[in-house]
Image (cartoon, one colour):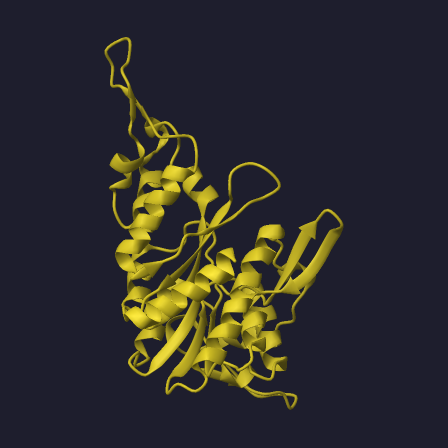
Length: 312
């Protein structure tokens, strides 16, 4: 563990990959400066929409639990830089990313854990942490979420801890095993952004076009190969006696429904998703709100608020 204390700024804790000795790379991380090349340039209107939902829920969450005897934690598994550059019809503008939104939340969380694999993005996020009043509450890990998240979550006694986890992976980087680990805490509320476009790319309309790599990616993400039978239901006989052509429906509905059903097998509560679209065409993403706490009262409250925030 590395603690930065310089220039009179509040310390923030740096955790390198594997929680080991930092070495040269970690030293460079703490000294690096953010440049224009580090900026997150992936946003459209859908980005602002998902972040607005997260902001509303975090504000509700810490206010609702401030008098409860729980330690409150926020976990951002694909944290980015803390800022987003949104490209719209009127040009580019900068908005707060998920990390900055969480740090600004009042009342504050007791602890913040940010995970960001890309060095340039982690550099810029580190600058934000050094300057922010809640920086001393934060840890920053430069590693993949799959490498860090299990040991991070294992550090807490979830009987006395509650939290919110923002899961906003690039494509299908989140595995089913990771989701099961999150659900096993029985204490985390989760915002999970599912890349429908990523699922489309792997699940080609024609089953023959789904090669072993694509099939493996789908099974890793969904935690089962049942998708083969659930999605590919249209069979057309071949006129020459060869294997029949098997296809899935061209729309997004079947993939979305199967994904939602699978999530419901891991989490006690899964919301109807908020569909996020680009300028035209099918939805690009589905934002799910999920509750891992099986207590009926916790589910009822979180579900009501989650519905209001996602669809109100």
